[in-house]
Length: 336
Image 1 (cartoon, rainbow, N blue to C red):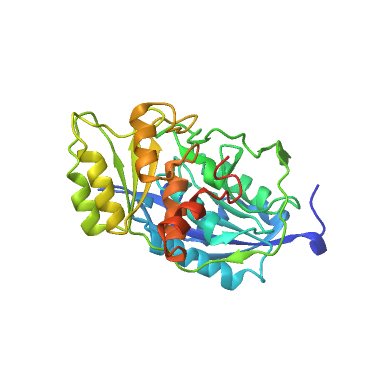
Image 2 (cartoon, helix red, strand yellow):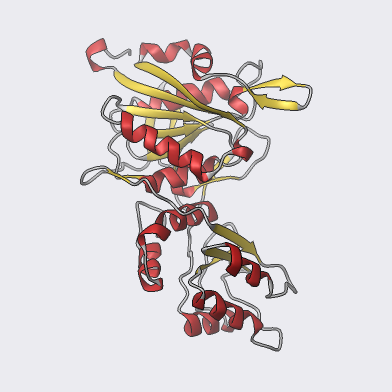
């Protein structure tokens, strides 16, 4: 059933590039298509909502970076009162980072901010792009839609729970250790979880992208953290299992952690394991380090969400204690 014109939402389509907007070149797929061209492939959405378009970037998502996502958030802030919702087309490879950062930069939004993209370009015959884009608009124009989400392969996924888990298939994204919010099918939006927004929307316009992720491997030398101390303001250490740091017959790792703390580098311990999160209290290698240095851990947060939250938190936390408390305070469903 098509809504009457006086009830139709006004949605802004923001394109940034990615596979969905790519064309074939001699060097491989490259994003070339503008937002109005993307919209022309899903003419049915304009029966449901009014659509305006803007092309902010034409970049492969590998070439996206935090400054561009900050620009998108600022653009949404300037346009927020004009539109009822926003659809952002983005490459899949870094979409989870982008959506997570927008979750922190535009908090408590009663208006939906929806990321989508494709595994196959929209101009190709067997593409998933048209279905994904149509579903994103369907969700963005739904009366119960709110907050920042990824809509992909019919699934509605909370921004801080999304991770790209398949490189080629249409089921590219999974919701990690949290249910899908709902799904889009047969022209309708269905919810597993009804989200409620309380209080006014909050916008933030500063981040500190000086964050690095270090993935431990067996036998790694602790002197990697000397480089971290010289070049970064925060580090996520992806440890083994439920979390910990090795002590290979010495305290070199603990000494390097102390050095980082003295230099003012913020540290978060996470796990390399995709599901069920960290718990440093379980084993000696974790409990020992946590007791000595009082380090925050990511628990069940995705690495993508942890990176984004640290970027958002760094400019707002003057002390290690403030950072510790800020990082561990849930914002939406980022940490349970």
